[in-house]
Image (tube, rainbow, N blue to C red; front, top):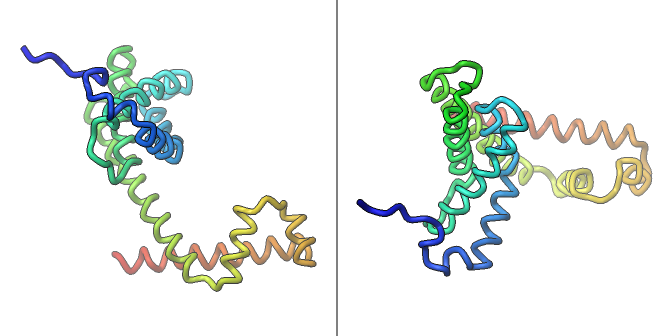
Length: 187
């Protein structure tokens, strides 16, 4: 009988590499909310989800430490979270909302499809932002990445807060229309 390899059996360079650890933590932090949601949708409550996500993080690191580069980290991590959560529910003999394995697999498909659509929309949004004028790009940057409140921003631009909100609403509407148009072209 073959012994199951654990993370401790892997070459130390995989687990102890600070750059690999930092890369993993950065990617996990970027997608943590989606990974958490993938577990929460199955277990149904935050207390159990917290326990499951701790286990998910351990499993993710064990698999990541010895894996080839993972291109779509979010999708991979959400799939792992779904399976760990499903196993947790089975162990606890508490079927989430009384759902069968078939229903749970359908939830996974819907969640996975939703994640893919979200990722596509985010990519399209980035593309649409690049199509904005430099002035509008700077404005968005000031609104969302800047350290100023909208009141401070209005003061700096010598305008009213209402004008800032109106301008932001118009830019966001143009971006939403651009994303919708681009999605429509793909169908």
